[in-house]
Length: 168
Image 1 (cartoon, one colour):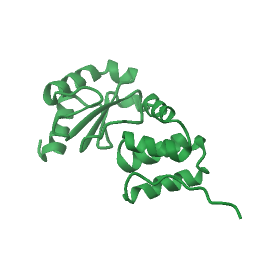
Image 2 (tube, one colour; image 1 turned 90 degrees about the vertical axis):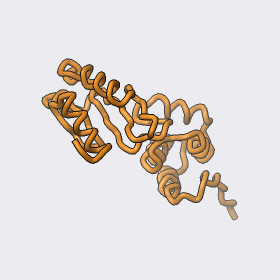
Image 3 (cartoon, one colour; image 1 turned 120 degrees about the horizontal axis):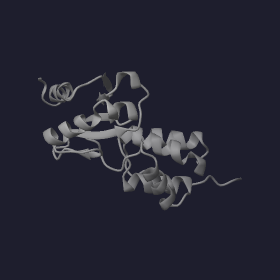
Image 4 (cartoon, one colour; image 1 turned 120 degrees about the vertical axis):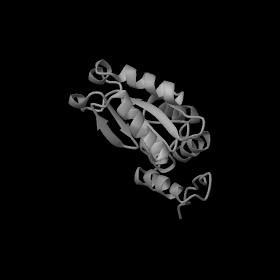
């Protein structure tokens, strides 16, 4: 009779860990499942913290340094909890020459944040995308996943005010 492998317990009883475990099982708990599993954690919890990285590393039998290295190499992964709302500004060439510096300056002036920062109240996180592939709509920003193309700095600020405060 073959002994059944014992896997580490998840960091908490949060049901979202079941999804993460399902992804690991789907890939045979192989170290090759690292990126997929980190995606599952990020999708489930919004970010990767030390506890989740440690759990994934132990579960897939990879060094914590490797899990951390992958999490910090890929721009998609974040180690900080996101704000309640997100604003992603495309910084591709077409967007950049069509006004992204002005958009970022307006956001810095109004909310006091730059790329990869969250407002102190945790309401808004600003991130950048290298290119979202809609260069004909440059400059483009996405607020809570909704794209807004050919956007001016005033339109962006108005949309964010509406999302954050419920008015223009």
